[in-house]
Length: 332
Image 1 (spheres, rainbow, N blue to C red):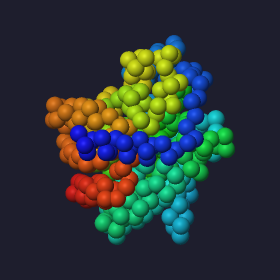
Image 2: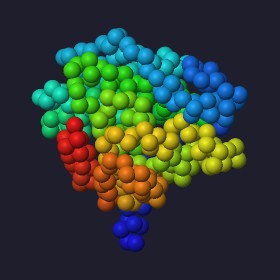
Image 3: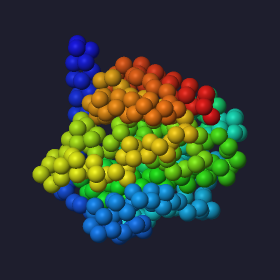
Image 4: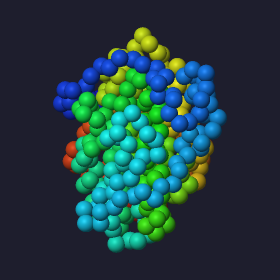
């Protein structure tokens, strides 16, 4: 009880450092339904159409338009989904090669990560024999249009836009995997943290070249984290009175990890959660872990003795890096 109170108070202090959270208007986002993909009558019909064929929704046409600078390790390529914001439509990644020419991973950082997020982890991965390609998520750092100071367009109270931008992240990650394959890598994995862990699982579920996934902070449902999480209270404020949790969970089925559990039956999975997490509520993480066990899906579990934000603070950041790197070295 004392430890729980200590970590929860610490998590609230760490979360309160960010002062630029904006309560944006609720929007069902019908204008985002017009992007390439299935059509259906209204928002619910569109979601139903997606769920009838998610491989088609996450299908990623190949590209040869990769621009790689070997001197800086910078990689640029076009996103497979064109959004209304030109800055967001070119994917940026940084490459950290190891001496092992066979195994590599795609790294997806957390929501609102800046350009340096997970760079240290990527360097550590490379040092221990796993080459790492660190992606900037849609609407993050160099992909952020000038009207934003936060990556609000990937997680927001705009229902269809949230689906489409998370879809874009998956398409970007799949093109990153394709680039690794073009470089001759045969054992490919993916690592994602927080929002990145959700996107990593959606990618694994639709990308057959991924052998192992390290999911750092987990939940079965996208909607529940937004509805209950410490970091998304400003989004919940906009949702309240416009949509309930059950409807939101139904509408966000295309981006729920729960929707794709059977599609990762042959993927080795690490599930990491933090015992005092207020952003990804712990009961949700445990529910997902229990479901992996119930379905006999191949997985390992690691529980960090901290919270969500404090995972990024020493010594917990070192513990987290150790379990992630150890898992990927063993399973790739």
